[in-house]
Image (cartoon, rainbow, N blue to C red):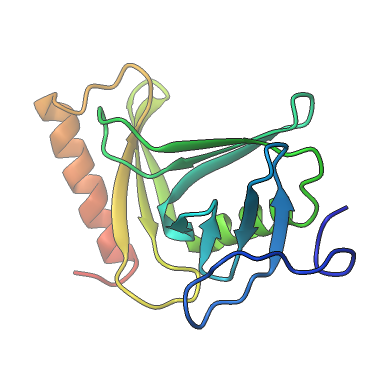
Amino acid sequence: MRGRSREARPELAVAKGERLLAWATSTDGQVLGGTRDAFYAPQRVPWEQVEAADWDRETTTLRVSEVGSWGDHRAEHVFVVEEPGRLLELVRERVTASVVLQRHVPLAGRRGVRVIARRAPGGGGELSWVFEYDEGIDPADPVVRLAAAEALQAARDEVGLV
């Protein structure tokens, strides 16, 4: 298991004021790490910009995808990591901590749009709002646009942003 207690802290440059909390090394020798505020691989990706992180135990593959706009290419980082240690726990905890609110609005049966408010896990900064559309939902459809706008307003009201 890799982590603070068994292995010396690796050389990984992190932003001023941040401290490496967990790390792992990919099979190609790349050091991956996480602080309270960001994932490093080696570029810095703030936790609130990580859309998803998936671990496949069989292939020992860690896949980290970034938040993006519907229809645009989203950055995805893929690493083969045989011993992820505490890094997986930190990734799950920090990504979850960045989600302030998440609401699903059904539009066609169970399919619909999800409104998500995210903020840096440290609590600083503005909320960022994103929509995630289920398969088969067209965000260009005027009915979908109206439903998404109404869902966004309801979510903003819920967190006190009128």
